[in-house]
Length: 226
Image (cartoon, rainbow, N blue to C red; front, side, top):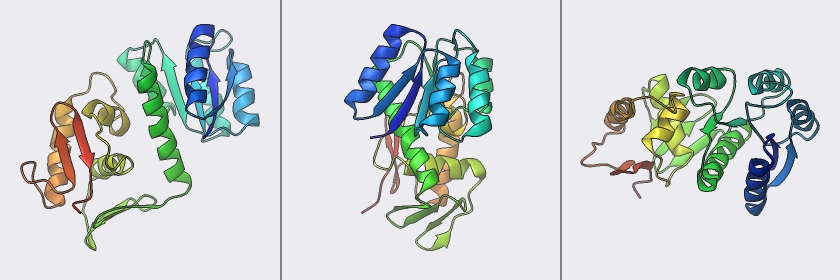
């Protein structure tokens, strides 16, 4: 269970999202305005803030800047604004995820789980171990069977994103959003190329995988060879 602050002026959406989060066991407090949302985010020390951009008193990007000035709490933006420049600007301003309306409750909850996992790793766990693969989050280093891996920054980010969800199938679209901050308009070929490079450094191929398993038509998952 996590404490979540939800800032959304649309009553129907606010109730739908709050009820879905509560059903997952989360403690949800809601606000219909940016200033009330900022007050909750400061006072309650939530594990996650979910917020709209189209708020009645302040633009959501201004609220995001105000939150970032006082807190490193993960922020997920849910909005009808889907233009690429808006998405990029919001992510660059400090949002941790961006979900465009309309969205399914299942997708929202999956993204909440992913953001909370990332937040928990950032605060507590420094290492992820998958079989003989050890990923040191704080040092941004990885080793395979005791041998250091020479990874580029994007290769490390890709490996970390998969390791944080080890055993789960992650879509290429989600990887574009999380690693490259390109939830819309990015090329999945970018993911394919980096996966190929990463496989080579892990000593495997797409036809003979050990750690990186491709689920055709769905995505890829990181698993222990054992």
